[in-house]
Image (cartoon, rainbow, N blue to C red; front, side, top):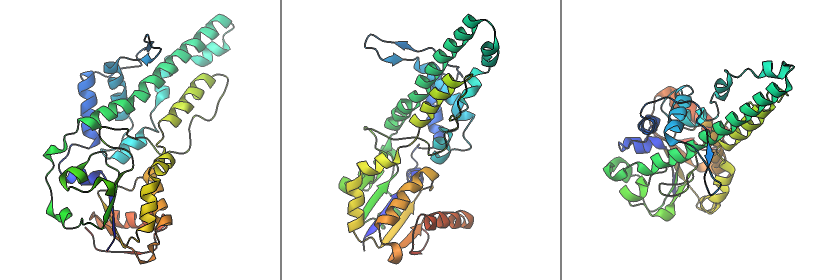
Length: 308
C-alpha cells in the first residue's frame, strides 16, 4: 500500500528537538545579550557589500518578533514576518511637518534622513533569514530517539513531504533520502522561510510617505515565502507522487498554516483522492474537525481514517 507522509514541526517536537520558535528567540537573545535595539546604521565594506552590526540587529529583530507573534508555532512566527510594525521606527520623525514647512532645505533633509533610515531598516530585517539559518544549522538532532509508533508506520512504500529543515527521517529512521522532499530546504543548505500574506499593506503611496512606502513594499515582498518556486524546484518529487498511486496520506505534526496550504492543494490536484484515506495526528476534536475542513477545501475527496 503506497503511503505519503506529510511531516511538520510537531514531529521533531515529539522527538524532543529544540525546534520551537522560543528556541530561536533564545538564540537571538544570546546574540544581543538581551538588549533591545533600534535601527543600527549600515555600512559598506571594501567589496561593496552592505553590512550591519549583528548584535544590534538581533536585538531589533527580537523586539519586532515579540511585538508581533501570538505564540510559539512556526505558523505564528512566519505570519509575524508579514505583520512587523515598521512604522513605529519613524514616529520621532515628523514627515508631514517637514513637507509643509516653507524651508525646502529642511524638507529635503528630512526626506533624505528617512530614506537612510528605511534603507538601514530593510538591511536589518532581511538579516532575519541569515540568523534563522544559523539557528537551524545549530540544532543538534543527535539527541532524537527513534520511536516505535512511527517506525511501525514507515515502510519501503512510503514517500515523505517534510516541512522540517532537520534530517530526523534520514538520520533517525534511516529513510532513503531519495524518498524525502525537504520542501523548504534542509540543515546545511539553502532554506526557505517567510510569510504567506498576499495583501501588501504598503500599496498606498503619497508624496509625504512615498520613500517609506516604496521601500517597505519591497521589504514585505522580500519576506514572502515563495511557494511557487519551492514547488517548481521539487517538481520531480511531485511528479513521482502523481504516478505513485497513493492510497494513504498521513499528516504528522503538520499545522496546516495558510501559506503551506498551497502544497496541499497541489497534492489534491495531482493525486486522485477519491479512494485515498487521510490519517490525521490526534489533536482535540475541535482542531481535528478544523483541519478536516481545510483539507476538504484544498480539494480532498477521500475519507478520513483513524487518528494517529
